[in-house]
Length: 584
Image 1 (cartoon, rainbow, N blue to C red):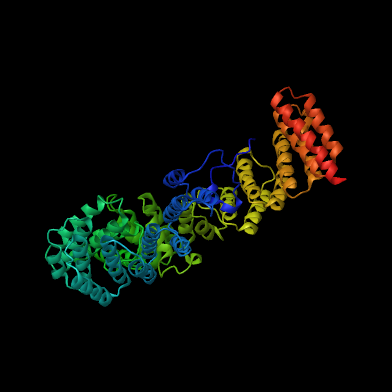
Image 2: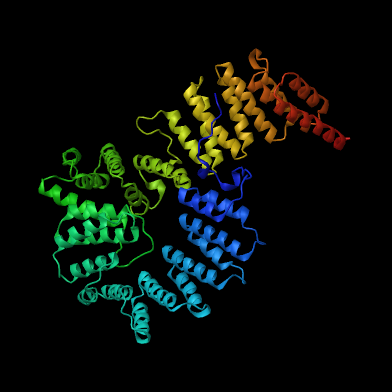
């Protein structure tokens, strides 16, 4: 059985990773490629290793630019603020302005409008910025007030700017229109937006036309859906478009279209807040319930007749999945039969996941007043959300979701589910329950099949990688006791020796390495045995058993024809003299 570590380093805390020294000169462009490729933690580690304080300022700045880009990719808004706040006093003015602009965007993305304005004040009052940069900063001040819901402050800031400058460019007109919309003057906003063609202007014009009744709701619904479909790469505009579509559908009395739009809106990440376009998971729950009640009443269904409501849900057209989900939503709250209620949760979750609405499902159950904590989320949904979190490497959320889910989901063996839970908990650093789960698997399995053993060992290797050698050793010994073939037992002895070595039990480690080398009559001359004997000699030296270490090395020399390997062994023998001298 080959020791295999899957490529899951992003799930392991950075401190636990073994940093292999690079054999080339890293540069900031290399870091940019890492971020683009998704290896953001590796990018940050590279910056940390290469960005020395004594670098020439231009070179230090290039590294810092890549660090900020990596933090932005991770959406670590607080991390960006910490870096910008700690910039050296003698940094170039150009880079300081650049960093302040990045910090403003980060604080707005984190919905910290007051923090964004602090950086904007530094830009406007302490830095020498161009007219263009000053204009952009003034717009962002107003944007921060709008995002915060401080309409009066936004109006005053806009008025002051217009008194100082002729603010007639499209960005200013768009900002003016948004202020008018927040002030409930939709008709004036529509007038301001005439002729503007940016996506933001189109979004606001459709909003103004709907609220001022200048355009039929169904026309707005169609236009908003069409524009949103083309903007998948622009979440800050796409999400408000879906929210607008939901508003238009509600105005048109189309409850099904409203649900479809709300599901899509919640599936797009929210970046900052926009009071004009705000939607919550509870809005979707409410829309589900209203549609189900309306259509259930029309069909003559009575609350409490569980089977009839279930049949209604199961009879939905395949083209109307969101309507079917409304009935399942109703069943999760109104039905008295626990089995039907659990089935409804399961089917609601499965339907959303099947259509790529995993983020919507997560919002419904983790960002709703209906489910104030993860413990309140039904098990059927927690299974689905845990799978989603694992797939997305959201380790902390996955660990919270699987904790306490003792029973395996339908169709999965109990030991497989326990193994999955244990691995997630290991990655999250919750070692005690993880080890208890692994011990439970071994306790329940008198004999381990090859596939289960392989997956179990991967978790034990993870424990070793995280320096949990005492736990790993105890579990490896339990696997050894249940192993049913000599090859596996031979390998287990080696891995047990690894943990003993890490625990500085050198003599015990050497014994296990040597047992592995010659287990079940093996000569120790094969590649596995050769490697095990090399490790044994090294640990014998660390144990102070210098003569034994030398004898093992000399025996290896007798059977090693490769010149490079012989030279390596000879160097190890020479180092034993140093060890012996230091010990005397």
